[in-house]
Image (cartoon, rainbow, N blue to C red; front, side, top):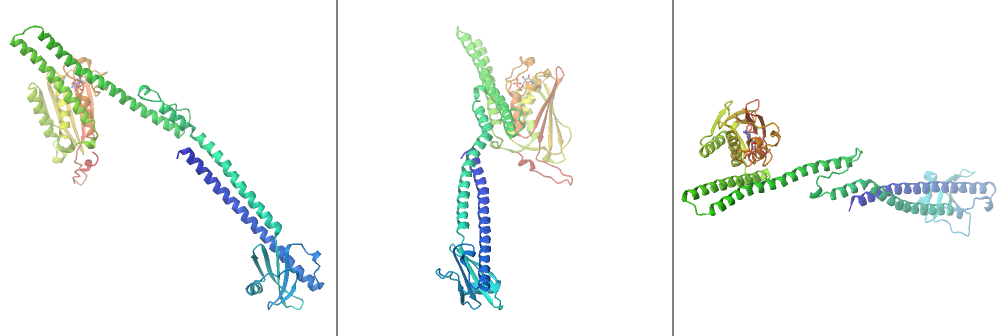
Length: 467
Ligand code: ADP
């Protein structure tokens, strides 16, 4: 059921209940009023009859208010009938209990079908108690009540129809901006993702919704553009070495070569293949690091050990690299060095930063410093290399972005994008500071599994749930 139908039904139900309550109250109150009025008339009739009988000795019919099927019966206190006004008409069959109730309360009302009756107590001139029962049918009152019931019921039905139509129009009008939003959102696809919803000048919830949609579209567009450029960059990065390799093979095949020339050609091909493997590995790691955090295998990892491992792996590949690792402060507890993480990913991140530090500095030297703060581990990777131009700094974490100033140095531009993703997966932050010609510092903050409180107790594993 759509919201418009639901709103209309709710509206009809609400108004119908209120009108019904009102209608029933009017009917009930009118019925009470009619009954009281008729009782009063019956009472007057009873006393008039008995007084006329006492004073005049007989009751002239013309003097009395005419009532349909009227009957006045006078009983002694013992229930013996003294007088019956209309002998043609059968007396109202009153019970002895009714008569005794009249004696007790002096006034009693009863109703048998349409015939209503009241019983009153009267003391005659000799101070003897008499019970007068006056009965009749309130033909006009009851027919008025019937008419009122019909009017109220048809009025209620009519109000339902009117409220139904009004509710439907009201709901349609109230939901028109939503329908417009839906049309606008439906018109946006991958081809026109730059389009935005019209917010208007209103400051209502729907304007908020449109604004939220627009924010979402901005984020989607960014991701979309990034995705597009990622695919075109990746294909470009893969095509370039393949083209180079094809050219080399074609040139080599043009004529018969000596063994040395073939060796040189194969070495060049091998370099290209290695570079491609590095790129593909980087892309695979990036894809892995872009998966959901819950898919990764988090284990307690000792950061210092991981840094030493990264250092020795890198130095074994590039012996000219100098990587110094130093502690700024010595940890009191071993747990201060432990973070919850995916070891292989963290190692990739550290290796990237160490390699960049050496690769982009003439002295091929990088210094890693470890600092412990309450529940946090801070790492800095600093070099005294070429530095990054200020205009490039906001982009260096984007996939495939490479600074123009270092284009001559081999690389694919995915190392930092991968590093940032890995650090964020571990609830950490990475920042960069750089001065061209002086050097670059990458600062990393990672939460540890250790949390020291004032009483010195350890709270290991608090951040487990946070990961
Ligand atoms: P790659 O090193 O493969 O080019 P990265 O993503 O690791 O890719 O780095 C992106 C760019 O950031 C590099 O091309 C380089 O211009 C710049 N950069 C990264 N680290 C440093 C550094 N330590 N010193 C100077 N420039 C750097």
